[in-house]
Image (cartoon, rainbow, N blue to C red; front, side, top):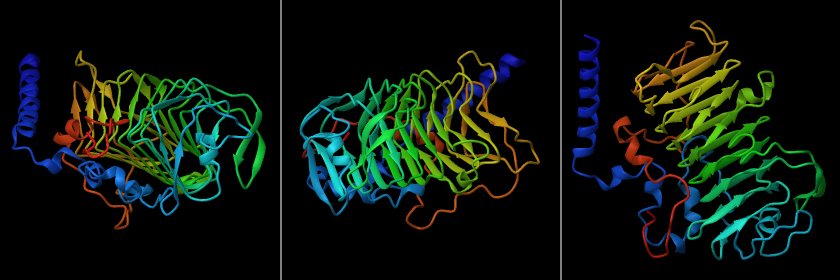
Amino acid sequence: MAVTHMKLALLVIFLQFFLSTSRPLNTKSNYNAIDKCWRRDPNWANHRMSLANCAKGFGSYAMGGIGGTIYTVTRDDDNAVNPLFGTLRYGVTRSQPLWMVFARDMEIQLLMPLFFASHKTIDARGAKVTISNGACITLYNTSNVIIHGLTIHDCQPTGSGDVLLYESKGVVRDYPMDGDGISVISSRDIWLDHNTISHCSDGLIDVTLGSTAVTISNNRFYNHNEVMLLGNSDTYTPDLNMRVTVAFNHFGPDLMQRMPRCRLGYAHVANNYYEPWGIYAIGGSSNPTILSEANWFVGPSDYTKKQVTHQNGCTSGSSCVLRSIHDMFLEGSYFKQSGWGNAHPTYDQRQEFKIDIVYLVPKLTKNVGALDCFSNKSCW
């Protein structure tokens, strides 16, 4: 009898997938709500700053360096205190808005964490740009930052040392950093899109200490333990105001947990693809609200039960809300819901975006991460 039920379940899954892939292809359906804004345009390189109008979710108001000048990164070296013109650190620490592009493919090894002044965009479209094997990115007490198209891996902890915080603040003595790929601290209006991030000493992306209005979209995460943390601690009450959208990302392979883990604040987790994970996929503690909507969860291939969620202190009657709607659960994966009340995001008109039906998620997340883009061609 158990074998019969399993066969029926497999048949249902096959029919669902077949129907979703056998329909006549609609060009629009191959792009999610963010990508359809720019990826089909062969002239994207002639009006790069229009990318800033494409963000959705809570980070939609992140304007980056729009309205500023184009700054071209021509050097791959780094000086943490006196960065030279042409380096990435020189650009991100300037006081004025800048839209930063790259003259060629680069591998950048940072000596100290890369701090951003407000109103900056890293736009790596058209080049293969890697930050690895050293310090990585810290957004501290800043706003209106867009980071698009980087490959980040093997970020390492750094000891205390002198570093240029940003031009108007000068050189500071930096506290030791844990080795996150991208650390968002006390910042707002942040958009992290189409990056490939893996294998760092601590988290791949951490959003902490009162940060809010953040969208994390179209990224590829793999080969790591603690992937994404939203919230500094279970007792840091400013994070009650945190609002983060996690959409259209691909999680896996070889990930263990925190995709994301949320404390206190709110996270909308929508249209993401999850390969089999080690411990849990989505976690909550200290009464967060998490809406998991139209995600594709793949459990272990041996058909053992695999819980998507990890709930610390979350019970059916608690104010810790973990809610699932329209999700797809495969290979024994399942979601344990908790809490009560409305979990839908309070998006305004600019932030709102269409959630695609879950059967399209494998297509919509197929080309996440840093893209190969060429001038005068649509970016595939």
